[in-house]
Image (cartoon, rainbow, N blue to C red; front, side, top):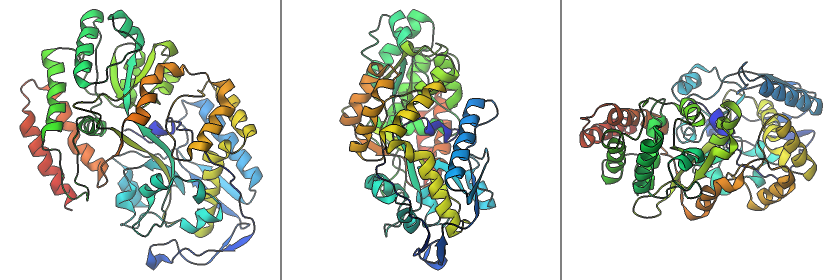
Length: 465
């Protein structure tokens, strides 16, 4: 998980209906700072205010920059009292907490679902409950997803914008070359091993590859553990729970595929972008990914749409489930009430307005196609199913993604449980699990039991802080 930009892609079709902004000056009722809120006082929606928004595309993505600049222009035309500046600051697992501590964050930016559990009790996020009501966003946010950004009193500290679940991405062309049916991806880890060896033997390519660096190794090891019936942390987040059969079985499987089957190629240190690039280039048969992998693989790295397939996350010993996570918009704890309201208006405008009417849904579909983007890629939504279905119906004539090639994944969204990422210090836990995956893939004599036991001790020490 190198950055949250990896999610804005999930395109989990966020549906929102009937959003109406309240004009004029309203009373702010958020608790004062002593109570964990954003400060008392009035909200003046006409006062001149400046906000900074993160996640600006890098210079190598001129079309994305153009689209953002146009959105800012349209937003400020609608709200002339709000000035919007943009910055490339984005969420990076290794540096985010340092940015929080240093007070260098923009007014609003995207962060991982793994962050709020620690940030809320540490008062690193402002209470935006009342401001959300003021801009009429609360009622359209899925109550179950909202739990990610709520405290034990139900107060809200962020806006979920994307939800994802992990499946198995696979190269349909390599399946055909290996004599495998591209419409029948593996559904168990035993089948993954068999398919990977067949792909490697018949094509000379890596039958399967695994994310291993920048916390993604721990992230995907967690996903495998879930699919084998295990967990990473106790329910209260105070102790590790992975020093048992499921995690060990996952690591042993990877070790066997690497050293016994020789079905994982010759590259074993992968971050998200690198592994997608090699996958798109036809060097990898299968890997764990959410459906958004299609976007980067096809648009950025030139993969043929016909070659992309997405199946369910393979299971072991029964349908246990798959990892779910996502992205949310956080607002700086330094923001004033007026800045919070302005930031929420921006979030609504940027993320949600296109789902409210047929005209805006169709306009967005046309703009997406003009920008060589994708309409209709399967995903899951954090908002109402009714709105999601209506939105998809409006956009149906513009779908330009081979939806049938995602059928295995689509079926899994109703057959597999969605299991949340570790709630306590999730990114830190992932970083401590990265070396386990790296070791079993690069050292033939790696001792799985010792690796897991040592990591559990380190994670326990970290969780106890």
